[in-house]
Length: 330
Image (tube, rainbow, N blue to C red):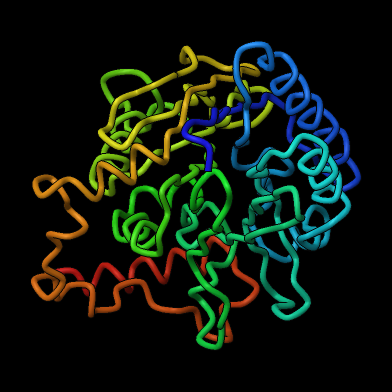
């Protein structure tokens, strides 16, 4: 493993598509950004990891999974991921794609919010958002299905380090990010569409606070690509960007100025130093110091799985599950 590589957090600003046939144009632009970033920075350093935002390919503009499947959902992998694979082979890089709305024939009533990590050898991992932003997102969580047997939090072993990923609202659940770290991740990518007012500016800069906190509490790098779409592109929200790269002590190594628009920021990711720090530290090693049996709340189910009658998901059925979950709170 080389000592240092560079990562790029890339944000996009597309109008939302209304038909799956429009996804190709977005893929074309992201492929251009990949090539522009790698070749543009080549005189200075090698960009080996590039991350894109949530909803870069399609946005959940409908209020039911049925409508999303009819109009926007696609299988994953697909012809778009094949284009990323060609670039990864050509440049020897790793691409964490923006998310797709995924249709899987094994789950015929569901839509997943899905990103894949693509490397020089092809698709390395597929991650489906475990914590959809309910009630507005009518995607299914893989955790909704009792017979789901694929890893919820996959981590890829690569020549630049062990890479995991989680999507947007997942990062408000420290248990999910910690599981990725305990699965071996050294770099965790955040693929996100984090809107105002919870974006990158005071007084509610959750975006920055959470990225830095998850990095330091898990001793990992965080490469966080946020959506930079203007309000007219993704109504009713505006999207502040602020894409960033954070080191394992919570230091911001690079951050795009808050505000909409296409932007790319790059910073070094030194996994060799991270491994040395993990091995050396006896203090502030929150993974090694974790007292698992002190947290019995994790043994209680709060948000129940949907019943058969709840599929395909709709906002109304999600609202009912949330009400039921609140009854379980102390």
